[in-house]
Image (tube, rainbow, N blue to C red; front, side):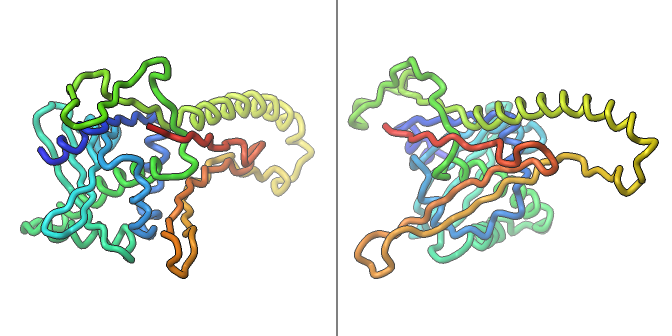
Amino acid sequence: MLSVLASWRISKQVYHFEPEMEELLYSQVSEELLLPVEVLKNMPYSCIYFESPNLYENQFHGFFACFDIIEDMELLKFVILHNDGEAVDIHSIELKSGQTLKECMTTLLKIQYSSQDVDKELDYGLIVVEKMLQLVLYVCAENADIQNADPGRNTAKPKAIRNIKDKYREISRWDVGNNVIKRIRNHKKAHNTTASAETDKEENNDQTTSPIERHYVTPHVRRGHWQSYWVGKKDGSEERRLVLRWKHFIYVNADGPDALPVTINCIQE
């Protein structure tokens, strides 16, 4: 725990997700763990605090995600803070080059949960870690929707560790998913207005329309997913990098299936 706090105090980064965005990313759990573990190297800072009130049964305030090395093992360590401000849960995954996120996560969790009730504990650990990974992956994505939460405030960034004062002014806060969720709300509002008009029209036509012609698929959202690809020459003349992109969800049987573009925001110190 102390090593994580020591790492976080250097950059002091906090990411806040729109509640709907948080839930949308959680809905991708179980389908996105075959990504190469190297994708986590795109995390913008070595230690980040994620506010995540919807992580698991409203028990938690958020979690730290932090790179660490223990006994020659390179890890991504998660430290989850309970709402009571006292208890913490700690999970880790080993970052083994060439393996998928699922392989790395499952191996270390099985070692961590060596109690008699291992299956129950492992299920809980998998659920929580999978959800946390979705938030981490999103901030790793090249096209993530991220904005400075306090654009008018100057954040003091000490140039050396000895100059760190541990003041609030040193904390940088980021809002995640605001533009995406705004577009969803606008789309739903427009769709509800259109649907009401269409319902009146359909009621007038029902008497002359066959059951087959009246078949209608309810508009719904097809879940988002991740895409990754390598950039850089394979001959070793330059360092290769794994790029991650989030493919946003689309509306099925609704106007504008691509009406939810993701805003690209470059984060710089």
